[in-house]
Amino acid sequence: MAFYQNNHLKIYNSLSGQKETFTPIHEGKIGMYVCGPTVYNFVHLGNCRTFISFDLIFRYLKHLGYQVRYVRNITDVGHIVDDADDGEDKIAQKARLEQIEPMEVAQKYTVNFHQTLKQFNNLEPSIEPTATGHIIEQLQVIQKIIDNGYGYERNGSVYFDIEMFNKNHDYGVLSGRNIEDMIANTRELDGQSDKRNPLDFALWKKAEPQHIMRWSSPWGDGFPGWHLECTAMSTKYLGNHFDIHGGGMDLKFPHHECEIAQNEASCGNTPVNFWMHANMLTLNGKKMSKSTGNNILPQELFSGENNILSKAYHPAVVRFFILQAHYRSILDFSDEAIQASEKGFQRLMEAVNNVENIPVSDTSTFNVQEWKQKCYDAMNDDFNSPILIAHLFDAVKNINAIQEGKETITENDKQLLTATLNAFVFDVLGLFKEERVSYDDSKLEDVVNLLINMRNEARANKDFAQSDFIRNQLAAIGIELKDGKEGTTFSL
Ligand code: AMP
Ligand code: ZN
Image (cartoon, rainbow, N blue to C red; front, side, top):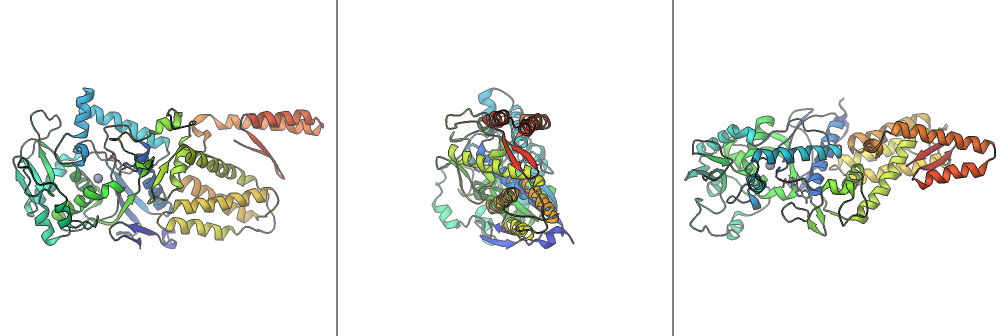
């Protein structure tokens, strides 16, 4: 029996506004699409939060034994400044300002995106398609939408006809918006626009002579609208109906609402069973954002070079800080909050390092089976990482108590505890040891063990001044020695 059959996963579906039992369309296999970054600037920590949230989800689905095809795109054309239909393309604007090719802009920030996610230990998606690499597929989707009567061409641009679509579909099904209210809140067309209705959105935009990013199409030279790429690429790699579509909360409307409309208008069916939205990372109570400048970059955190930081933070600590909040809750960034996470992270890692050395007994006072089940229950309840982490800290408490002789554990339970703790900490949460990127830990271990041996010798010779000196000097540089029944261990 596959592992996932024992785990009844519930996922909050933005479409229904409820947690629903998750069953994939094809037994044992999951298709998941997540909207990727618009590569016109360095990714900020808010962007990273969304990608770490979906990395947690990807990791847990894989952990349950599903075969997951995870598609995450790169938006390298079509995203207009202010998410509007008229105006300059974000990448083209940056290319103009920096006087480089648009593809140089996309390359530079794609590389930064990959490097940053690697530092956070994110797994790579199965497929990472780019919008510019799928122009033909996007043209095909537009043609189908026109053929089905939901798109129209005006002066070299093609628009999605919302009024026509809404006659036999529900535009607003995901965001819960009502079309009459949307019309009431939209500016009147100013006579310059080619749209029939202000709510209509661009599928294809005519490129003016000065526009540098352009492709030929049946309607003349132009470029695709932003929402179109995700419809074209998700259906190409996952089919017209797939399991999970994710992105940040701010993409729910209009981006994902438009994706649903495009899919229904081109293929005739609703594309996705589960829509998942990750909540925002805020700074000073406001959404982190590239355009407003209210953001902090991961590299600033890793170096400590930002006025709001008192020190540098390791990528694993930052990841832990993010996972301590549920992906659907707002998380506010502050130096104090991440400092608290750092302490918690170190306590957790210390226990992970020590668990293999705890002494065993004939009986267990710690019910490891029950604890393990609680960990799975937390993750099966819409990937509740903060509850999972709370259970991991229960284990930490028990590990420390066992080490101090206040609790006991059998050999079998110890093995189960070690395996489960490692699986959740490393495989599911994707955490890693701080020293991994900073220095060669095997050498450090050798050196500290040498000092531990010297201290033991000093103690055997009753040279307590020397043994205390070694202990205190190590403590001063942040290495703490712990004496237990099985000998001395250390933690950073
Ligand atoms: P963009 O590059 O602007 O298209 O954004 C890439 C991803 O980051 C999208 O899924 C956004 O929803 C997400 N995102 C943007 N700002 C934030 C934020 N402050 N917190 C969390 N996710 C964000
Ligand atoms: Zn998208």
